[in-house]
Image (cartoon, rainbow, N blue to C red):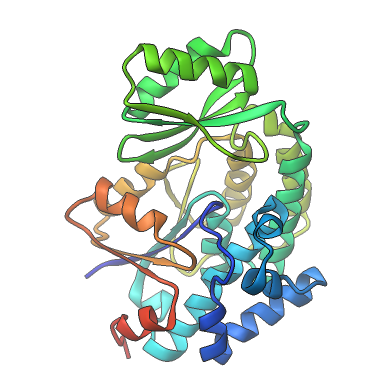
Length: 313
């Protein structure tokens, strides 16, 4: 069995996530304490108790999801003997999950990951005035078809492919009017389903350029190490280990397409046949099962999940 650990992105958060893990395992509590200290606030209480609308804010959801995933990883290391360098072939994460993957691989610390994600969330929120941007999900078309719809809809504005999630799920991002035009075009072309998403900003498109610049500045001040196993970068759909390549990929990711389908296919082509989603929710697990039906995939985020995970000692 060749394993990959994968880490979820925004949208997987929910009030109460990881609370049972923190109650059961001191290793999880230590991660939450480190993130709280890094941010100078009690983010873990917000994760455990809500309110939901505050947890959903980009500035909170991003570091919270990272904390949930790394708490799960630390528990698996302690309780099931998981060793990333020995037992895992590669790591990957969806959007903010790429930061989680890099922290899991030792490229930077949990403290640095928390601070970078807090800054990233704030910069992305500031990049576009409220109501000026939008995102929409197209269900059915492949990325090439969705890209053609986006290009036709742009009309001098911005409409781009933000996420190629696989399994016929592509997300568009851009100015509100252009994304609305894309829905009309998609419906005219017989796309099975096309819906606006309830998001606070148009992520992963060129409207995020100011946020990309903010991350370039922030990342320039953080020492990056070589990950202990390759991390598959969203914008490259391939493995990176060189710190400067990692830095460049993280900056490009802010305005670039999350090529998740291609990442999963590339990992499978490299021999991965078992995917473990660590943290909140099961979104990536479902996508993997549809992208590579022959692969094993499962989510770990609760004490019960930890108990069911194979002992690797």
